[in-house]
Length: 140
Image (cartoon, rainbow, N blue to C red; front, side, top):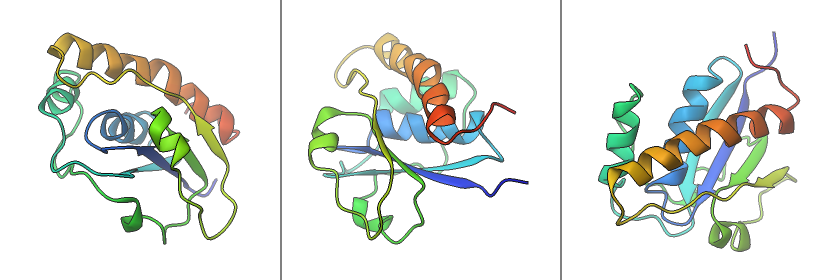
């Protein structure tokens, strides 16, 4: 039995892309990967469009809230994934070396729900395989 790998999905506001990615990874890779998300400058709340897009896919949204990077710095992180260019540029230094990948996604803030759904589906299509590859895991 492999030990559960922990990944940190990092974005600027931790209010949309990183939140959707956290939920999607936790659902798709349950039992292999534990995803956390945080922001370099967290917003006050998760975007309504992100919540709606997750609910439309039947994914859980309870307890989602933006978190500052400080809230997860003491976690044992196996992989950092930056999902926006700003987070990549301001990614903090961790207490030990942590592998990183950068996989940017469109920011749908201020756009109709269809944009949030498209980003949700893009995250599922590109991020899940990228995490599996980066952690040398296979889909269950």
